[in-house]
Image (cartoon, rainbow, N blue to C red; front, side, top):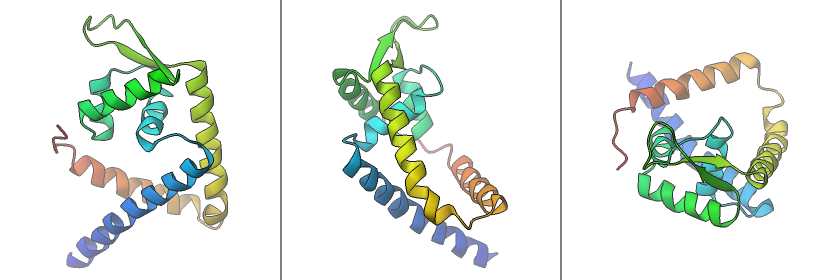
Length: 144
C-alpha cells in the first residue's frame, strides 16, 4: 500500500508544475491571466454565480470576485439576473469571452497534440480517473 501512496505523492508533485507551465505557455500567446481563464472555462458550461465558481475551482469567493470583475472590465463576462437568488447574480460569457476561451482551448489542444500523440485512450481514462478520485477525496477542504 505504501507504494501506492508514494505514487500518488508523485502525482501531486507533477500536477502543480505541469499546470503552471502550461498556463505560462498559453499566457505568452494570449494575454489572459490564469484566474480569468479559469472563470471563462467554467462559464463555457453555462452561467454560474461567483460562489459556485469558487467552490468548483477550490478558490476563495473573494479571488473569484476579483477575477470576475477584471473579466467584466475587459468585456469578457457580464452579470445577469439570478431567478434563484436576487443578491447573487449569475455571470455569463459575452461573445468576446466565448471567443477568448475558444482561442485558449485551441492553443492548448495544439500544445498537447505532440506529447499526447502516443498516449492511448486507456492511459488518459486512467489518468482522469486517478485525478478525479484524488479531487473527490479532498472535497471537504474549505477554500475560504
